[in-house]
Image 1 (cartoon, rainbow, N blue to C red):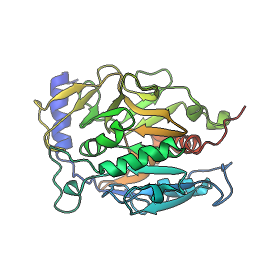
Image 2: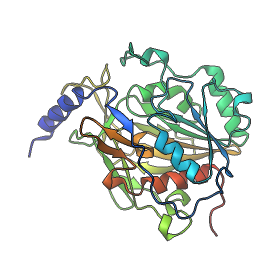
Image 3: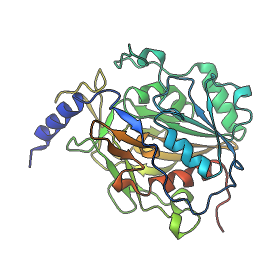
Image 4: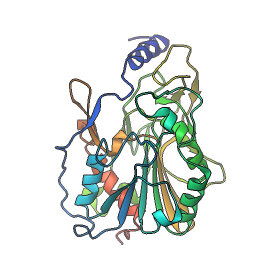
Amino acid sequence: MCRPGIALAVVLVSLAQTPVAAQQVADTAFAPPLARPAFARDGGPVVIIDEAHHNFHTSTGRYLPFAELLRRDGFRVRASSQPFSAEGLRNAGVLVIANALHERNAGAGATWSLPTPSAFTDAEIAAVRAWVEAGGSLLLIADHMPMAGAAETMGKAFGLSWSNGFAMEPAGASGPFRFTRDGAQRLAPHVVTEGRDAAERITTVVTFTGSAFRPDPHIPVTPILTLAPGTVSVTPDVAWQFSPTTPRVDVGGWLQGALLEVGKGRVAAFGEAAMFTAQLAGPQQRPMGMNAPDAAQNAQFLLNLLRWLAHVPAPQ
């Protein structure tokens, strides 16, 4: 067994050799059983997946399994390539923002270095905030640097602050994190984790590295995924370029998942994106996400979450 400092150095070197895109492709064969859809086919609310902000995950790319699972549950899933506005959001029930990026961080010439610009304009953030207050529901997902930094201004509009780094266990291990109801990485009881019956009850949720965030003290947030004491956010100047001296922020007790009510609307915020899709990673096509053996309940967790965002009544 390595001492913590040595273990961290080994992990950081390993991560530094990981390609930025991580060679992740959608697992198009992923189709878990769905015994009791929430809606008839195309009978549910409209879910808009943001694709206007150089998103690392899109409905026809790495988030295809996400989109297909929701369609099987009856949601009407649409992609949007337009900046956020009152008109563009008018007919949406749920807006999904997954790993948005500023143009500086996108494409072949991307620079994943500090400072990290916001993916959104002030006008877009104001439009999303007003839409949520009027009854819309937002699923905001911001992974590790630079996605966390790119979502910082959108998060702050709802009282959430991200650490623009990589969430890791105290000894420097890079995940995955396994959240359970009685574990150090804690999964909280809520209608989202209880589901409609015992078959939909969630006892374990798995995330894959990601980021950490925390609410402002005056914001009434329901924590769903709480990081264990001693968890750190490793914050390099350039994403994936680590050394044993790279700064680390103690994020024990911070969150990777939270729910909040805002006016008439709802917000779900998460600090990791792979947990909500099914990917094949690297030359070995390793399952990562809902298709991973340890993450067998992640798909049901996603369905429970979207139903909550869509205001599907909880069972009495």
